[in-house]
Length: 347
Image (cartoon, rainbow, N blue to C red; front, side, top):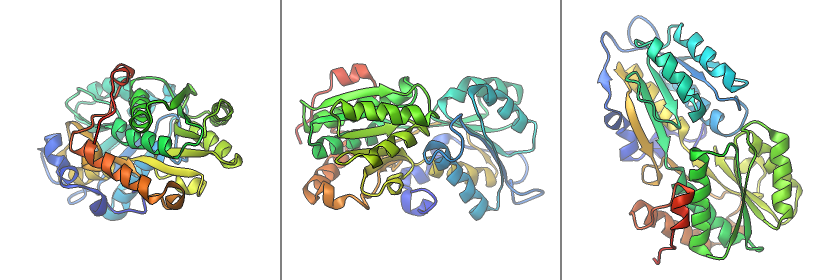
């Protein structure tokens, strides 16, 4: 999906109608980029920064696409820690940008303060809902794609024990966790899911260590939803025979060809580029939208290196499960409480 895939090819009619869902309102004056100045976009990364080959890089791919296709001038402020969020947002708000993107739910409180202080500036946040009128909010149904990841893990696992490695334990990551565990349960109610959290999205060494612990406990597949920390887990997977990882946010399959079954991609780049295009048209994105499987907002990659390993029968089962989620026959849980009451659906 990322830089290698075009927006037209990935976006469904609903995703293409993002402008309507956001409730965009025309800005006063001319369109950005078509009048007195070119489109100007800025972004504040979370503490994982660029180079995480995951969430931040996906968003940055959307910004780069705006530069290439829309002629946008772009700037990125990288955050080394949460203490950098508000200063970085404020520095960009003091500049002359048509839209400022805040990456990650951990930035939401800081964004609220900055958006209040700069009511004439326009912001967009990914992975959180912000109530300020000058902020657009984009969230995803991570539980949808994670359900398919869990189903795949249960299909392929030989030990009947699989792992989930998250970054920071909280409501967002529990959507990944709950969906994954439910998907595995859909295939095998007796499968064991070992859950661990790094406590960070940028601690590569701890990600590697916890992956080793999880494999040592019997898991032969780990779903890695930990940002840059996940690179350590993928490195550990690469070094061990007979085990596999599932990537997250970006297409990570090529990081360890044949060792990553698939990646559960969040199409953050599509959302970033779509907002940029509407801003260039002279409109101000505001309000909230949630994107899931039916919108192609999330989904698994194409199994480029693992089709033979997974097998055609299992790929067909995955396609059937995807169709059931899109049709509403399966509703993946997004919390541990919902997971506790989830019952596999007969299809």
